[in-house]
Image (tube, rainbow over all chains, first blue to last red; front, side):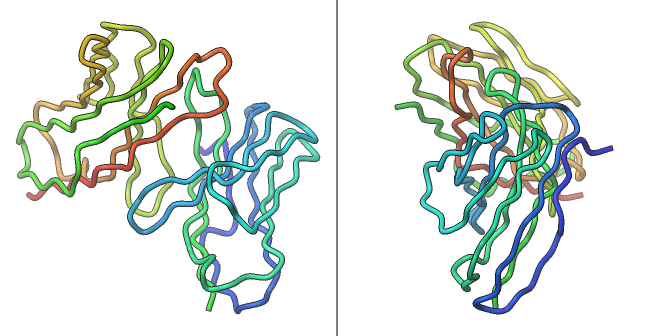
Length: 111
Length: 114
């Protein structure tokens, strides 16, 4: 059974639409992360959070935004989706020392 | 800065063959090292880890030994199965008490043929 949940698994949406990708974890982790994974498999950190009301941008610049109002919830929002946003988005929680738990991912296609 | 270099793929093996996926790292401190696996259509799963030099991580028949002298953490399995087909990521966490995040390698695609 998964301890970190991402919804939806797949999303096809038109250009200009606003979307929110959901991520929730039941492990009580303070640290959470969003990665973008390109077709070449490489992972790019786009956002992270150390706890409630803490959010930081990652190594890859992204037009998305995140919020952390509750420990268990770390949603990612795109205000106006574009085809260049087509990718897989992976949410994770945990600590660098012990390792991360990843969700199953959301595969986003913007047409 | 920290970095992880993985063997380039894709790697294709026959069932029961021996597997090695090379991973070397650069870090300023005393990192923890990890291998993650990503099966098709899924997120990453932690496969094994090692937190200090000469430690051996193992899980599901996979092993990797933390070699500080060669800054390596190569993944091995004695006899692969078709179900091992996946993408494998090496990762490190430098200064585990204060690290912001894991540093991932670029991933190695493994395909095992029956």
